[in-house]
Length: 394
Image 1 (cartoon, one colour):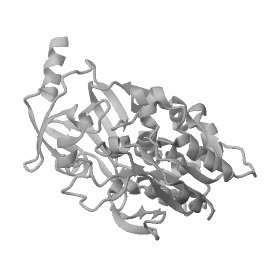
Image 2 (tube, rainbow, N blue to C red):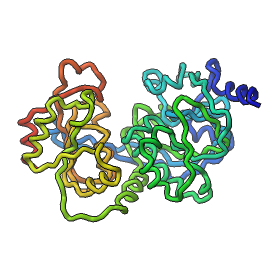
Image 3 (tube, rainbow, N blue to C red):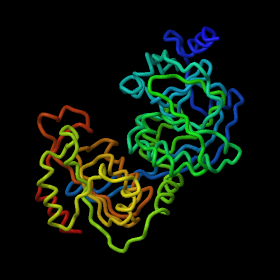
Image 4 (cartoon, rainbow, N blue to C red):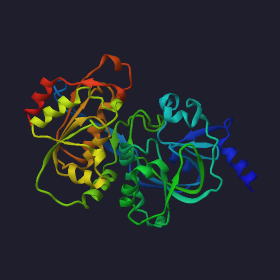
């Protein structure tokens, strides 16, 4: 029996096998699998924010948000820590581009080679789980152990699952690292207490009946070029409101509103990107801000705090995901060094999805020794005079 299973799985994970690829919708239509449209293609907004003393006006760009669907894939193979799904001789993805396949480290772990011009992919995977999973709802994805990606890419999909009662007996399929990091959050949003099946990074799993919904966050660098060429940083408003409202419904109301500076002083040195962060933090204190260390707080403690924050400030990082829980008219000040590419629109567009208050970017100067690094690794300094002028306007 074991030898037979090995042969079955080697057909899927054979490093010499060539796969075609297409979107989930295309695959379902071509193979007669269940595909249920939940929402039409619609417009979303990407926010280019104020950049203090550099860009005077915020600008909202209209972008396309693809239709929302629920699909059931038969005899699928999923890969822990990734979002590509194999079925027969096809790789399914709504989020794949040439850049994605050729340059991204996380894709190289699964994709051995790709020629998207002729729709051909070979895989690198060879590990497999011996026994198939009968059925599951897909909550697996890239960076699912990251707080930001878990909260905006993974968790919102439950909103659409809960609208389809016929699948109420489907377990949740989740990356093991994500479950380890976010079990209290998962348990809170697992409204009907479904079974949770954890899968491991670097392992392939066969699922006889795999239930999938479309993405709830879309990034222009990763979107399937053929189908969705004009998507920017846009988020599914209804799904994000579900995440927001579920958490806010469980907190105690407070009258006092805070000005909060998210501190990174307790983090490892390479993650403290603001090189003079202690001095900057003290400056914020002079203007009535309190320092907060999110890593010291439980999820619900963070929700409680940020739901009563009138001004949120700090250096860019995953903690800014908590702007999901801010009052709608709050003000956000994000200190960063990302400029001139779509990365500067990430958190502003997320804020635009749930709030209507002001969003300021305060641009720092990248240090000489880190200027050639990736955006998320560069260290930067802020002009204190610029910061004071901004704080004086609050």
